[in-house]
Structure formats: C-alpha cells, structure tokens
Length: 96
Image (cartoon, rainbow, N blue to C red; front, side):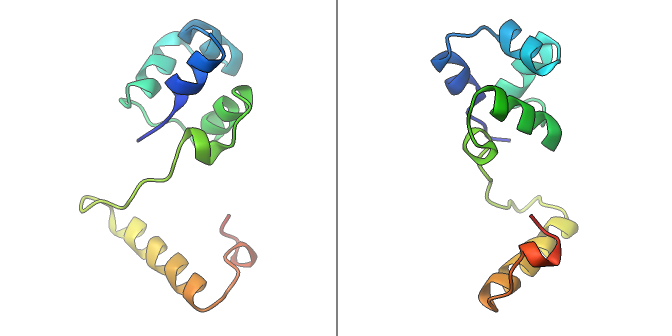
C-alpha cells in the first residue's frame, strides 16, 4: 500500500519511535508501514493521519485496482462507479 507516512513524519522532525508512541504501536510497526510491508487498519491509518495533522487520503492515497484484486474489490468498485455515473449519492447508500 502506497503511503506518505515517512514524508510527513520527517516534516515534523520525528523519529519512528516518536510517531509509533503517539499512535500506540511498536516502532517496528511504524517501520513496516513506511516500507509498505504492512497495511494498517483503517483505525490506525486515521490515528496516524490525525497525529500528523493530515487527511487520511493524503497520507494513504487510494491505489488503482490491480489485476490481482479480489472479486469483492472489483464488485465494490463497479457498484461505486455505477452509483457515480447514475448520480446516486454513495454516502446515502452507507458507503463512505
């Protein structure tokens, strides 16, 4: 998963230890996220982005679907695309 954690952490002049302690995880977890070896939960993404005073989608930008994406991901993506092309509010359908 692409992310900009290292970029924003360095802007704050923080170590991985400081960021990890701020969000309540081990330094190794922070390192794995920065090196894209670990995909954090949505809650952890939110905590990291909030700590860095950024939006979640800025720190963890969306990815393009790959050929290896699961059938569920493809179906959800198609539902969202259909909703937007029909002018249906995705938020009113429960998707945020």
